[in-house]
Image 1 (cartoon, rainbow, N blue to C red):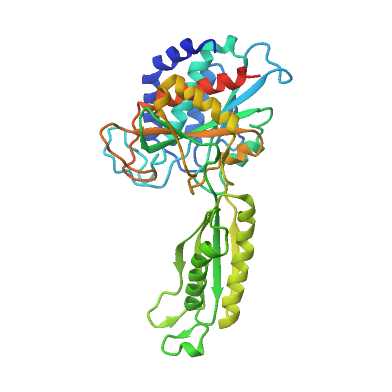
Image 2 (spheres, rainbow, N blue to C red):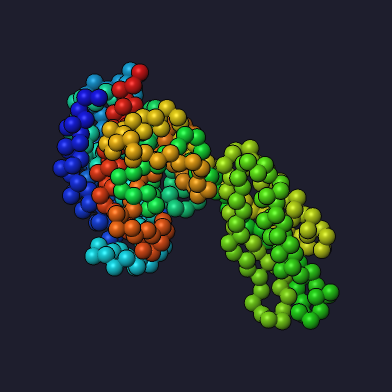
Length: 398
């Protein structure tokens, strides 16, 4: 590819700027659906680079185009690079000099790193604007950490119109800096939330035979759900059911009228995902029918599974080998049962996401969503260079 030397030099020259941006974002994190300041800040920087910026009318989330002269959608490709910008409701415990100044909010999932990497791609590729063989579009997506996430809203805003491929990354605090992880096919799971309310008949705790105890019924349903995960589905196609909240009553000697179970169901395949609700209903109806209770079930569909396109992943691998060498490439053996709404973009164009190693050489390892999460900033230039080279490669491929 032509221009890679200039690209590398531009990103290397901007490394201090990228670190400063990341720390600025880290100091001023914003929760999902409240990323107004972050969106404004990014829009200003992208406009200053000469990109055409499109901010959602709601003021959160944007996409921006780097378009070479003579670009035609009919004859040229468009590659998108995606970053997410929201933070988490976590009290930071890193004691870093640039720790969050918004108490109770923290970039504990690395979205500040993702954003700085995507900005690094823009800074690098803008130096090659006249040489670009196609258009590069940048997504700075709001509200990834909540369901429904911001990806489908950005899609509705038009970010995927004319896009041929989409690229993304996610920091990985287990992989050391200088390594990336990638795989073809399923990369993450879908994640759907549920709320199941058991309605019984309350009364005195000394006379349960006069009641329909919803707590007892709910525990039987909970046990059945956990057992069903390993018996009702093909064991080769993972299903993870987690009950994260059980709410019922507030007294020692009063059986309540209702008990509520809340949690998530995570699946890899679309077919298995479709089997979840019927199973829940059969199980709840059977247990409630046995003990005289009733139930209400609400399912809240989250992001579908990410499935990396093999062709796009191959371009990422090639870019990583050029930047880091072949020994730095880790082939991920199994998908994560976590979820990511990057998958909404993949419903409209082929794409892939890789894991960017951010574990420092000192051995410190604090996982995602930890109040002590502190990724190594040396990874910023690496992530930027791999994304930029993969974008150039896809634009140039025939």
